[in-house]
Image (cartoon, rainbow, N blue to C red; front, side, top):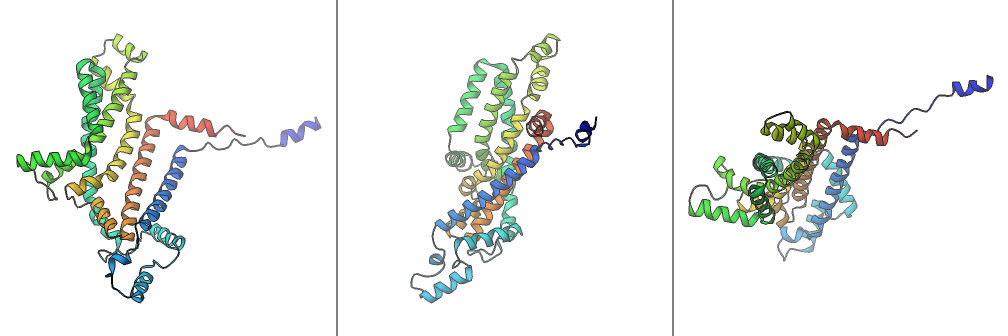
Length: 330
């Protein structure tokens, strides 16, 4: 009996708390953001010395040295990156070489235009691509072939070429919409259509393949055997089971739209963050370039993190599978 007391008093090992999928995704998002900041810093400094652009070619060497010291470019690269990261965490990206203003307010002034463009393109892609995918999977036949061909065309068509063609047809020839700039809803139509095409094609193809797989399952046959209307079987029971991958992809698409807006903003002279980053790259404006890319990367990471949270809420199996994988260790 006495030999069993220590074993009774010995506390059984507590099961290690299951690894939270949201915590893992948050750590992954922070790692991605760190990688974006480091890569942006290195690429920006690989473009050359901005002092050569800010001063005339015959400027004396003492003036060049003084300007480099004033801009902080005479310090070693690790020190410059450390200072950039430290200030970025405080919301301070320095002062633009090109505009002479603080970078953060300058980027925030153009950010609403980019968000409006990305949101309009995302709504078009989701509201058009999702029904097209469902129709292509449920109807089959010629409708499926036509919609699949259109989605392939959307994937293969470059955004800048499509934008130029839309400008040529709807602005130059038909005079229905403005050529460029901003100022109203009519200015948003052509750039939003151009930006949405690739995401629309991807979403429709994903929904189509997912619905084709779901519509062959037993619960769909059971629903049809119960006499439910076909539209309810397809649009309620079928579509609900493909929403998780669609939400995941939609989050990635929205983040991708923010980064892909650069080309569209240049084509349509849209005053957004993409056009600002192109100006910064041409002028070797390191603070402005790093600030625009860092803020765009932060938006991309936050949107994907939000999509991950939504997926966990929609499908508890994701949370349970991760918990089972991390919670059984002694």
